[in-house]
Length: 454
Length: 112
Image (cartoon, rainbow over all chains, first blue to last red):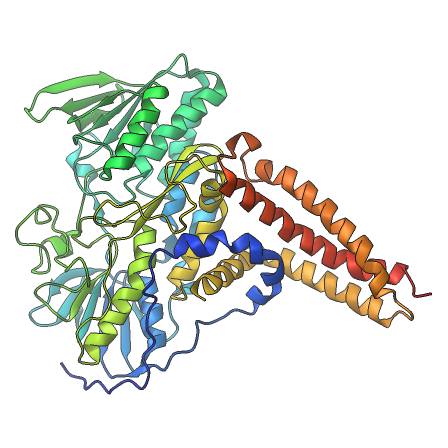
């Protein structure tokens, strides 16, 4: 390492209580009236004495994770050189895609300028990391620029592997009943147009789920609940059939939520076919092909299809020494981090944050909200010559849209424990409060996370 | 403390989303307060009751219109947490209405 860390006079301790995200939001209305003007004067986090260091920290990616960690480190380190590598100019609020794709939000609500969220004292390299060389403590960008680092935070996000679905064309989303909420705001908007058209007459809807790890694993379920609701609103539900095909033996990794959603779908007449993987789509003919684990192929005609792509690590991570080399996460090329500290298991000056991490849970914005302060503190600990002090429990939450106006607020951890922020919140109860959280309050909270304040 | 900090941050970001409205409301309140304060014999104490009434009326109205304003309905009130939150939203807006009404009422109700 090229730097010599100086002992901190008083390094700020991160929040070590659990699941406070929803808790704070739930007290918002109480403070809303009194806090209206106070809030406008809010500009920075509580004062901490910053750790003096000359370390060069490279952050690969400027999604929510990259921005949150960049802003935190920019504030909590004194003298560090922080470099963020990402070409992205527009920051998309991805948790809002399901709202756009179901006609609840206009698309303009999900896009902001990345420059507005980038810390002023960070160097922003407008390129993409094409190669990681952790042995030499360097990354190489797609223009061939080699950037050396003392510490690396990998926050690249993941790759939507539509190419694994034969015949799939992302550019065709919105046409011929083809939809997918995942790729972009434009795709989400096109998905709503297709859903709106479909619900006028009804017909056969085919909802899918791949076998890989997913970002926002609740999104395919939300889309299914919402298309049922939109058909009902249009009076065409009885003329329609909604089939859900899961490539897995379940539809959600948390058993109690899985069972609850299946129970609700039974009442809504949404049958599920398990171990049925979408492998091909004929867009013009509106015909999908699914396979069983035994390789038996079945063709299904549809009027509306929601395609959820298989997901994996981007090539730059997948093809690097940073990826898991064996075990269940190796196939997807996910980052090999310790699930508790989010520090790389073989390269101790590397941390991972967000979707890229090869951990059992946690590809949501809520995960980043909880884990960004932990990664920041653990990285600061390592810079200061200490062992990481913070432990991540795998917290994830999912405001699961049930219909227009109601949602479930599901929170859980690595062990599939339901972890409601407040004991009074019933995770399996249809809730207006959970709806308002999703509809109004989570984006402001998200922006505060991106700015590294909460 | 973290919850308060988080709440202030959410309010701050919400305020940024509706900045013209927030600034306009704050400026209006300030103008009304200055206007009332510079009036001779403004009846601040006498104005409390009517301001409170206006606040309660605004609370009741907000309570009933908020579900539809948020693309929901009373049918979606699942349990007491939903009712409690709706009540507090309404109270918050009622508080703002009362704050705006107070200087107006004080200007109209002179001290004897």
